[in-house]
Image (tube, rainbow, N blue to C red):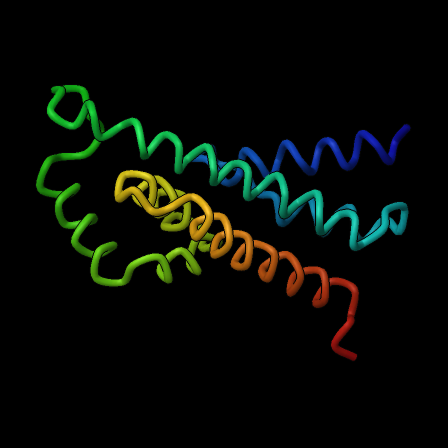
Length: 146
């Protein structure tokens, strides 16, 4: 039963960390890896799935939020939104390889939605970025490099 709650907690933390909530899924993953109660590959799959699904939520928000860009309460100025869109247009979907980076990664996934990045390419690049981050973290934690 404890194992199931650990996986569930990791999933929720990874999901929340991919949104604009201030959460750290890496710390939870490392803690669970060090307990030796959990299978490392299952933890990696759970963390990656939760984090990618959180990014998908951001992408969906981005697809719908531009409709409100002219409202007074819109959280980003018109000029800043234009600059961000131009930067995304310049670097394209490959900028999503930075979706794992703290502070810039989460807004980047929202911008991908605003820019109408096709879902399948978004999903592929974001999954690659986030899975690689967790894999490297697990490898460093468990000493897989020697």
